[in-house]
Image (cartoon, rainbow, N blue to C red; front, side, top):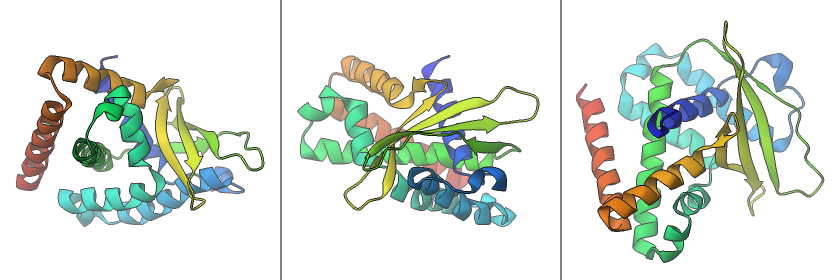
Amino acid sequence: MKFKQFTIFGLCLFFMTLLPVSGAYSQDLLPPQQAIQDASDKLKLRLQDQSFKNDFAKIASFVNEVIYPHTDFDKISALVLGKLWKEASADERERFKREFQTLLVRTYSRAFLEFKEWSVRFLPIDLEAGANKVIVKTEVLQPGIQPVGVNYRMFSSNTGQWKVYDIMIEGVSLVTNYRTTFTNEVQQKGSLAAVIDGLAKRNAEALSAKAAS
């Protein structure tokens, strides 16, 4: 599967998993699972408002508001850039994190607009007492096709909140895929700054196009 196709597919599945889980599976969730469920409750209310789907700016703002407390964009950005993060200036790190977050939110928002019928279930996980990292395992279920495994690498922050820092679709990491893509882009364009500029331009153009439509 090509990177772009995988990324959109994977992020759409991430969005799906943030949506409501059937009552049979939403009871007695562990704290990291509950973090995902909490986001689903907020999104469920918005999905009931059909007029909301016609305003992409509101959708993007709302999706960002919902996923931000449950996602560590600093950690994700550092993992995505790898050694490039260590070599980057403070300004480059901040700019990359901001544009990368915008990219993710744009993709989540597109998934919001393309919402279709499916359900999600949480699978059993092992969470030892005092553990600060865990993989939350889920399956996305759709009529007529095989379940798709969507797993989340999560950690407990200093405030005790569980946050996502990587997503694996059928065992393949989105962080790893993004790292490969951005590393290749830096090699092609000659610098991280040039890659960030290109990402910022694509984000601005995409958001302008959506606003105009």
